[in-house]
Length: 611
Image (cartoon, helix red, strand yellow):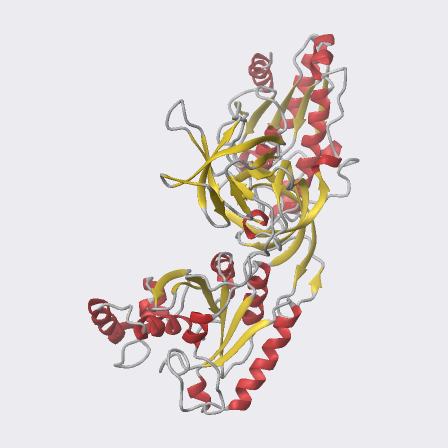
């Protein structure tokens, strides 16, 4: 499909703080007669209290709905508004200007067809201007309007406008943006926003509104094969099974041969429904329900594709991220990845670089902090069907979700696969875990002891290992200190190193359980998400989380290694319980309070939990 003028244009309005974004939207709404008389009366009343324009109506208040925004005169959330003219309907996202709200800009830009980048004529191009431009380009926004605002405050000086246009052109060129329309405007008066201004006779281009009404947005290249992620399996009764989703690319017709990815099973399209109406054909953007004949196994997150044009499937990627979490990104920490309608476990295995948004330089980095942009290597716990983001927004854009809080940690785009899933498969072994366990007359399992330093973990682990050995069980004990002499000797005690420490130990423990052993793990393992990750590596019933509990005061009093005293004096950094958090287990399989129970009593309780 070639260039079209879609009936609805989604655009994001961005720029640095106080560049006039909300005023631009307010002026567009007002001049397009999208403001009711009651709402205008309210704005006039609120302007006297919150406004910045004296007794005149402050049109920015049409958008700045939160009280904090009105009192401070800034935007701190993404405000979505819609309006229309006889020529087109618009959905506009007003992105915050402050750097700490860059994640909101990513939210607004992720679904936009066009970005309006606002620059204050008095300030020129700022670092936040570059940041927003790079985020817009990262999320596939190809069309940009450079709106140089507050030109009335610089007496519509053409040289100032041209200087800003040239400066911005350098940034746009660095990120591959070429469709740039530069317009001098005054949002306060509406000049060159909704009507031409006589104050700038040197400018003969369109107003901002006229450009938005007529801009041609390039859709995905024509000739792409059919792709539809399955969002929902519709079974209203036993005689109907339909697969619902929005066509992400290409077209499909009744009778077409299709393949279900990642399983690879094939079938044919028996019918296509849009709502309650039957259609013979559907194309990109259509929300449809497909039925197949013969019926095959299809679940949410699968992708229905053209049978002759298989979609790529992989479990390792290079990706670009905007980090949106208050907690920094730690390499190896497990997250939930939501890619189209599929959810899988994922972890960043390497931060390749962080992007300096002011100049585009790639900087070495071991972590990403809030609002950082970076390129990373990403691995998922099972193969996923995808397309590079440059080919398909729907199939290449994803978010990472914090397992503990369900907060969105990052928004990202897939650049390319690092290792296609078809290249690496599990090698079948004739001697299985069950065989090894039966030979040892035991059930292989992992007993994971977690708790603060000096809570009693090592003592209990050692006694349990000794008792099980006396009983004839086959065991191995992985102790936190001992492992750091070899397997993890290259790791320190930063949060990122702690995450990698637990990841390595969990993988080793899994291999030992596969060997038929009862493996006892004694690690502080302070972060809940890493313990959950460790549990996810094992089959149900194989992993037992044991919380060895003692208060900070009791642990510090015991202090067999003198570590608490050093940490409290500031001689040791990132010490759990002092200047690094310990996240208590919420639902441990066994809770041992070592302030109340003796080591022997703890071992008795532990032994009863083992099969």
